Image 1: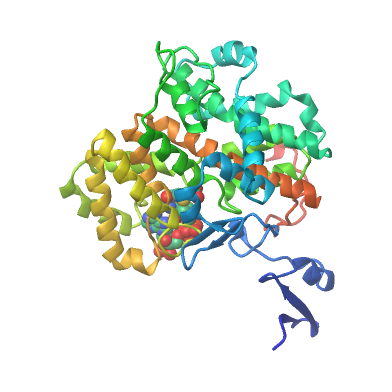
Image 2: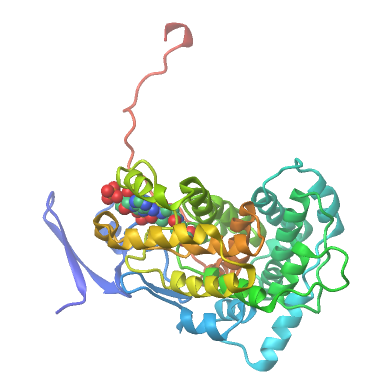
Length: 422
Ligand code: CMC
């Protein structure tokens, strides 16, 4: 059996054989022989836009690994900061490397005072924190103009450290500004998750002591969100990065992609949906509306997973631990019932629709006191190392600028008609 495919152009009878490599065939090898004939693939459902050594995802069997390590093991044994190192550098750090990494990240958490004062004050009083965060990430580009030198690996490393360090500070800043509370400076004595919680909630106490169950749950959720191969925002990061824009504006573009309700905005939509359903007896009518195609069951379905999302299993376990501390959310019962019905219903079964990572994350965040409009912001903090590891991979491999083709379906050539004659 030959590891290749043979394609025949029936217009000319020309046949080409293309080798199968890493589970794919080269479109370039195809177009070299059949120029002007493009693969039509809106939404990139069957197109590999790159090769990557970062994340392995087997959607049929519910498998997710970062650099070869199963997500279940990382969620149980690792920390978000260690996972960031793993994604970016390809290997788990030694104890010394981890110490240096922790030090580097912890000591870059501060932001320029102009960001905190004038920049934040420019927003409308009820600005959405995700809009503020997106703009703030882009604005970092103006504070670090040296980031434009993307050809220097050491310089790239510096910007990567800055982004991972500063995003929680910017996120908490956006939140505090949106509720009219003063900014809380980072506390370098705390770990990554604790420091974020401190910047969110600290009032007048000298040191904010987060509940260890809640900070561990937050750290675990960040691990689960850290990378997910070529999703919409990561692809955006690569597409923008391929034009050699600096990492701050590229990450701001990725953040914008994440903002949408079909991507990172889904956990916020899940809570809206659960609130709208309101009580147990309204569930059957809601499921009927979903099956009629009037609404979607938010937090269900995934482009790649056609089995239970392995991240959702871990999130569910965390939910139990968090609710033991915070008390059970009344919306949880509605969510559990929805899941139970959907897993039995032919509509969902035949379309392989299972809960995804976002079905339960919103409930956890909500019970921790994190407001709904911060949910996508939380996702951004988690996904930042994923975006940056893909950006670094893109830079090292010196990939060409992203420039897909289109199939033109507009009018043929026609003559301009003067406005008076139209
Ligand atoms: N509820 C009801 N029906 C659905 C849903 C849903 N959540 N998702 C897909 N379907 C149906 C869809 O109507 C279609 O049915 P039919 O074949 O009869 O037309 C079929 O399933 C295939 O759907 P699709 O839209 O072709 O699937 P997609 O791969 O383009 O979309 C998705 C993937 C995640 C955008 C979609 O499942 C969705 O909108 N889910 C709800 C939003 C959500 O939870 N998003 C978070 C994704 S996980 C976090 C992340 O990675 O960002």
